Length: 274
Image (cartoon, rainbow, N blue to C red):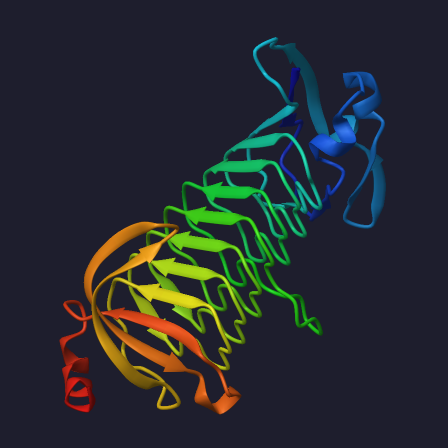
């Protein structure tokens, strides 16, 4: 299968809506046909070839189509939207809505990603080597269904509302996060290796949140259940000990919130309730 390579012809000053950049749409097309696909730069419809240099390299070892994009893509939005096959590799920073409603395949970002990454994702894998913005894997405004399946791995930090209305799948973040991790969460797993700014699990009804770093406090609508030596994420044991809280009781929830004891000595007063 071929590798389709893209790079911007110039620095974009306004948003570029490029949801057509997916293996699903590129598959079976020549570079010349791909160049004629329509995108929006601001309020102007343009051909993809007007914005990007496009080339093709054959690779018989590849079983699926790969799209490789290099350059500053911070203004380019919706790359990989609804993709179900293949792979996208991005060398540089990328704009909002990366992999929205993604169903399969893999996206790798060797840089940072803006907000709404993996929004309402259903399957596949997104891996970001840098940081991300707000609303990772979240539901859009007015929707009650966020991430339903798949996996997101973030090696840096993330913003607020990670996993808003999450229904399934796995999110692993190795840096720090903002507020409201897992807000309105129903199912799935979120693991934070770093610190969390607070209000995690608000309105949570189910699922699992694991925080290995520091938290300021736990919402009063969560109740302490146990002190666990370790917790498993995708079958991998993470050594603790961890405080296990259940909630959010305000929502009639039974979600599990695991918080590192060693990183949160200020929560030790909960132990008298065990």
